[in-house]
Length: 221
Image 1 (cartoon, one colour):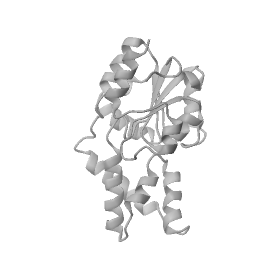
Image 2 (cartoon, helix red, strand yellow):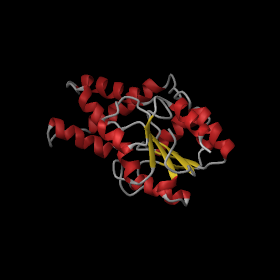
Image 3 (cartoon, one colour):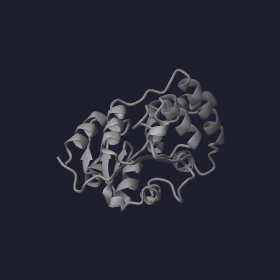
Image 4 (cartoon, one colour):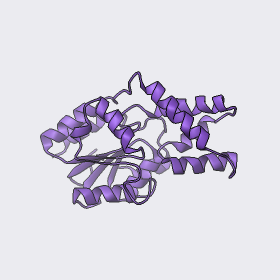
């Protein structure tokens, strides 16, 4: 399967796509909830994936009630995440191959993430790939968070290209909604969330992993 238009740039989500952090975030949230004396169902954690903390807090209040104080959960889960991450955050399979191809093709690329810049620098810097991106757009560096298209529209402006000429790679439902809403060609590479009928509709392709994305890019004229 080819893409509907030539690719003039590529933008990547980070968590769950470039680095294997989503499992650690979910583990930290579940363990922190137990530590604080309540249960945080996996289904609720799943709905938090792809959100900034403000969006995640809304998910928590929808589940526990408007009076739920999420601050202790946030503070301790962040501590626990970094404790878990001390052993290293794994780079997802296929990342280097895709970046090498973009280098050879001289295609610009950026990262559009709901994580804070300090986390981007920590996770990507640990693998020596931070400088391989032309720009980073982290939480707070665009007008509205995913699933709003604003992060990806901001990325298109940074690239100086129409959004329709940009390929977006995402693993979360909210990320796909944001990228497709901006008008980008969007490929979902599922991590913790399975593709739904909605995702099939919004994406030009559902890829099993970044190796498949690499092969697709190699096959383009």
